[in-house]
Length: 190
Image (cartoon, rainbow, N blue to C red; front, side, top):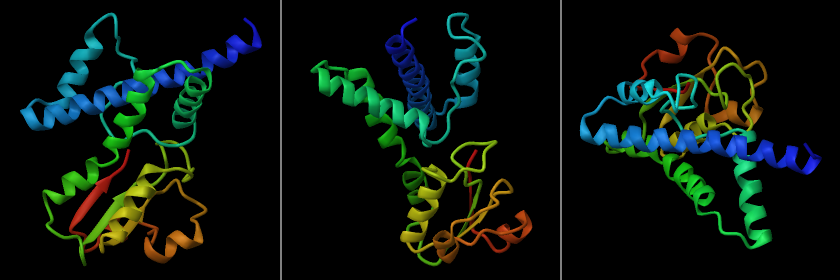
């Protein structure tokens, strides 16, 4: 394989994974509205031999971090640079951006206002099993909650170096019990 082909292969792999994430998140949103169980639908999809149990289908937050978003951006830029229309990749980007509004839409259905509400975010890293906060959707959500007037607290045992600016408005607790004390809502990020 040439260097150009190897480089091109890497970007579409991540774009395909990003597409899977957006697809299952849209299906999960439809499940919420129709009464279907997203986990049951996920299991059903994975039982299809052409999809398989190891597929990248698990409803959750919008994808974040560096790799998937970066490779979608690379392919979008390459499409523009070469004048090639890539509506599927553009759609993945748009779908992921829209899914970032899922938490605000859900919370608006529970609390008419967030002012003064104590909300605890469990898990702040951009994905499980890492201690990286860079481009974390959980941190973005916590900051959004804070901007809406909520008193936001957090717990994540993976974090060892908490950015000083974040500690000022989203205190990181050393224990889950401390983080959950007097909380009115929990945002579980996994």
